[in-house]
Length: 108
Length: 108
DNA sequence: TACAACTATTATGTTATGTCAAGTAGTTGT
DNA sequence: ACAACTACTTGACATAACATAATAGTTGTA
Image (cartoon, rainbow over all chains, first blue to last red; front, side):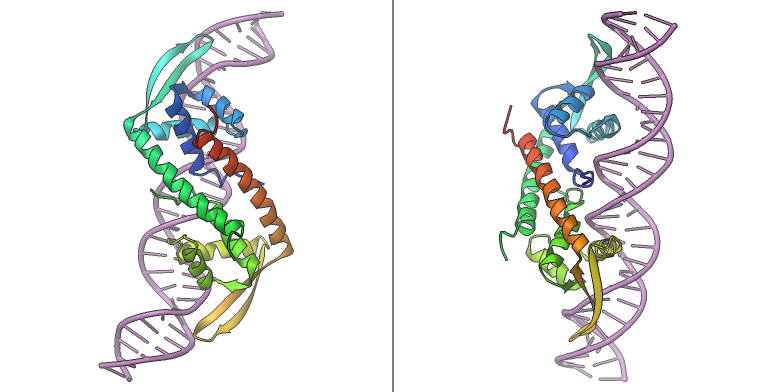
C-alpha cells in the first residue's frame, strides 16, 4: 500500500521534531527518518520540506563545512517553530484519536 | 491548526469504513462523519471521495427515492473494497505507530 | 402562490504536499 | 582518472482536501 497520502502533514512535523531535538542537517535527517521507519523519504521529499520550514520561520539555518563532503546547512528550531510544533501535536493527537475510534470500531 | 493535510488518505478510509458497516448515502455520511468529530467535512470534500471510491470499484451504487427529498445514491462496499480497507488499516497502523514513536519521544 | 428551510447531488477551480528524476559538487580511496 | 560516498538543488507531476456555487426535490407557512 502506498502511504504517501498518509504522510502529508505528518512528515513535515517529523522533520521539525527531529530538528527540535538537536541542530542537524538534511542528509542526517534522511538517515534518522530511515532509522525511524520512514525508509522511502529521499532528497526530493526532504529538501523542499526544509525550504518550507525555513520560509515559515519555523527553523533557522547556518552553513558549516563538513569534514567529509560539501558544505552542510545546519538547521535549528526557532521559538515560533517550537510553538507551531506544540500546537501541531495537539491537533495531530485529536485527529488520530477520532480516526482510530472510527476505523477500529471502538463504538458501534 | 489546519488539519486538512493530516486528513489526506485518512478521510477516504473513514468513508469506506462507514459504508462497510451498512449501505448508506452521501448526505448521511456527512452527518456520521460530523458525529465522529470530522465537523468540517462538507459536500465538496465528500462527493469527490465517493466518485473516486466507485471508480476504483471499492463501492457500488444504486439509486432510490428519498421519503423527503431528491433521489439518493446508496453505496455499499465491494469485495475488492473490503480487501483494500483491510490492507489500508495495516498500513495506517504501521505509519501511525512509527509517527507516534518519533513525535512523542518514546525513545531518545 | 411565493418563499424559506431542509434534503441531496454535481461541478469547477485552487492549494498544499509528497514523489520522481535529474543534475551539481566536494571528499576519499584505489 | 574514476568510483563511491557525502550533500544540496530544481522542475515537473499526481493526489486529495477545500471553497464556492449551482441544480433540484419536498415540506411547511404566510
